[in-house]
Image (tube, rainbow, N blue to C red):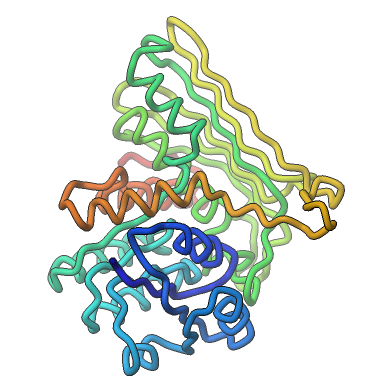
Length: 327
């Protein structure tokens, strides 16, 4: 039985927390978050210990695994600090880090400390996306020529609205699309060049983003062309879609969750039911736990996670310069 502590209990950290409570292979025992209200609320709901920082926790308990769900720009700081303690593994929710440099620093530091490192890209575990990957690999569309993906929703709200700060989050291109880039690379191989246009080029430094939008064209070494849309400019709801076109067929998927209160799911008493995306986070966490115990590589390796950040950074550079970026 592995014991787990979660650092960062915002929306994603809470999803991880609820997921861990349903996985028999481990036991969630603590949460760490500087926000007293947030950490105490989730700790009370799930009967966990709550701590302001890692040092306070390690003085009392020593969990086997630290699951990092803090804001992206803090991943490097939290992970590099964590390896100074006797954790048996570190898990980081994607995006891996705010920059490629920080991603490499984390990877090298964990390797030097001999602490297994895992990065979770949930898109690989969505049933529709996992099925499409299998279909592509089995030749369902023949030789793929073009793939189009889209992911959209309203601009997010989070602690201190850090996601609306381009410097901290990388905007929609890094925060929302990094997992999209990872899935595309998983399906179609290495990316050769990146060209992108987006609103982030017009955001004044230090000013919060009211919305963000980006279009990214990926040229794969295999010859496949990828067109990736990301939007924080759709107040109507949350959407994900893809089209994969080849010489023998077409795969399509389209999902939309309206933002309207009328679309909320409630139980018989009228209480709102929280959707935790269990079908995504459960297999993702089980995969990493299996890898930790068996030594087999996880579905998404650290190298995969680094390459996803490399593509995101190239897209941001292209938006800023107006030029295509060769990888």
